[in-house]
Image (cartoon, rainbow, N blue to C red):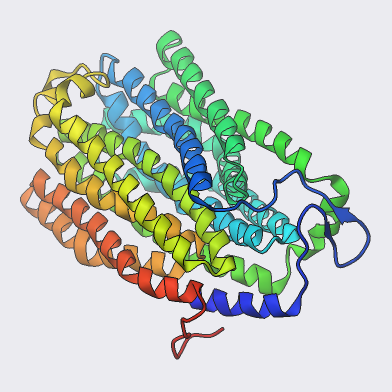
Length: 487
């Protein structure tokens, strides 16, 4: 949904209803007062933004650190194909799980806008609607797991040993689908309500238990790649149990009964599905970029696949830091867009942009200066460590452009501007990444493959940056809906 369209809808809502400050919010039926433990809407000033960003960074940091432990446990096994097999299977799970990342992103953006309007009922309904969608999708994944496995591994090219390791990982991890997708919604809901401390708690439960299970299953019990999958699935269920316990304190049974009939309201459901559709297309295209990158790396040999897997772990680590800033921007942009405070948004864009670029370039420089000491923590295979120096410099442009792209993703998610996110990735993929990825495959050139990834990040960053002036005009109410767009 374009930002101008949502602005017009909100303007009509603001004229036609009285908004009360929660808690409490009186339901239209008059049967009871809703009371929530959520704090009043956050004053999105500099200090609150930095506090949100700091907590989000701590929460996000646990995710890649757990992933690095996975890589380290597998990378120090006698055979390298366990690490390569998990990397191969991860391509499938990126499609299965992160394609449905709209469950987290869509929940955060719409919840933050409801927070900005001080509409407690809407905040609840956003979480409930996306929770129902998440459960339905997860059950579909479980029912279709065998054809997904068969088709996925028939498309991905690798040696028989690598495929066998990947299939073992897949068979264990797939049973965590319901918990994983529902956790997307739980995390997105708390991020949208600016309750990052609860997200930090959930992230801690998930990642600490994941590390513990990985050590138990891989190192102690010798389950190799299957152990890595089982560890991740179990930790997701523990996270979900804690998350549902927290939500139970926020929403009572009578509240659920009152709101349940509203979940299927046509207008609200259409808005949710439209926004989620745009994010779905965006995420699918983005994941396809990394999937093709990994697939072509595998085609270039197990050593290149292992090198690129290690370097992508560095990109992932930096991205989680930057996403902590972007998550805070999602909440702030959503709140401020409802309060027509474009000047404060402009100031925060400058501040957060500088922070994001500093983090991205800082990580890249660190690994460029000390590649061998740092990457030797993840693997002891000399054939990998001796070649990584040839490619580590690509981290600089990837993370430089990536820092801008990740932050602006958060900004436009907060504005519920899914159309811009969708078009930025499609343009970057079709015009930047694919031509050079095809050339890399044709000439078997690893450097061309990394250049394709740089162009993908750069295309997204440039496209989204060009949309900022229009979005700020929309926030302060001076933007006119272009002809051809429907309100």
